[in-house]
Amino acid sequence: MTRIAVVTGAAGGMGRAITQRLIADGLLVIGLDLDAAGLADMAQPRFEGVALDLTDPDAIARTFADIGAEHGGLDVLVNNAGTCFMSEFPDIPAQEFEAQMAINFSGAFHCAQAAIKLMQGRDGVRKIVNISSNGAYNFDVFDPPHYRASKAALDTLTKDLARRFARDKIAVNSIAPAMTQTPLFGVVSPETLEKALAQMPHGRAMQPAEIAAWVGFLVSSAGDISSGNVIILNQGRDVR
Ligand SMILES: NC(=O)c1ccc[n+]([C@@H]2O[C@H](COP(=O)([O-])OP(=O)(O)OC[C@H]3O[C@@H](n4cnc5c(N)ncnc54)[C@H](O)[C@@H]3O)[C@@H](O)[C@H]2O)c1
Image 1 (cartoon, protein in one colour):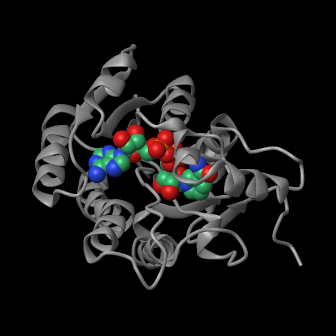
Image 2 (cartoon, rainbow, N blue to C red):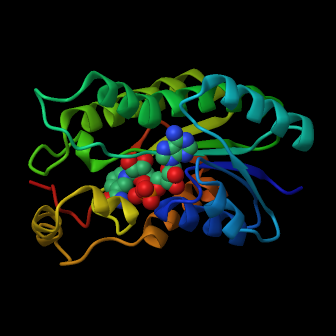
């Protein structure tokens, strides 16, 4: 039976690569994103795009209810949607703080709640993969504190859900990448970007397909025995 996956932020740099990986691995992917045109551009067999704002919990509830009605359940959720607003502490506007947490954490939280219900009673080990960031762990690079905190919150959710649903065979892990070449690079100045890339041990940014391969691994049967882990992908940059 075809496994059903939801990928949030599917129209972004990493989201497109993750979607391609999972489709190539035989899953049907439902991509959620604000970017309706980007989703339309991804039209292909075994892909369905749903345009919605993941900061709207009611829209999330409606979307997952529709997925349940149409597909009868869900096997995989990849919480990938996110952004990095760059104002600096202590001058971060309240609205920006709320938006950073809403997109990076609350959206993932609400998707996880809705997804877990649709995963009940499905065969095999079902999977949640949360896309975190090295920014939650490496304090030498440029990330602002509200971005770091949103990802740290996501990783705590990973561990809580992993423990809570282990016996239900729902595996929950985070992947925390460092510099990966996507449109998100646009949030920093060319100088900051150059400095951050110079810190990457291989002398280059990582590519979205490289991160997607790790998501694919966790989603595959090889990933069945991992839960509650935060997998750091950074070419060994932060090992001391
Ligand atoms: N690129 C990196 O270097 C890097 C490093 C570490 C972590 N990450 C994380 O990877 C994930 C993917 O980022 P990316 O680099 O592909 O960025 P991206 O900007 O290319 O993609 C993000 C996608 O999320 C969507 N999105 C944003 N807000 C939304 C909302 N409210 N509702 C619905 N969709 C929304 C955007 O439309 C976009 O398609 C993010 O969680 C990011 O924090 C990226």
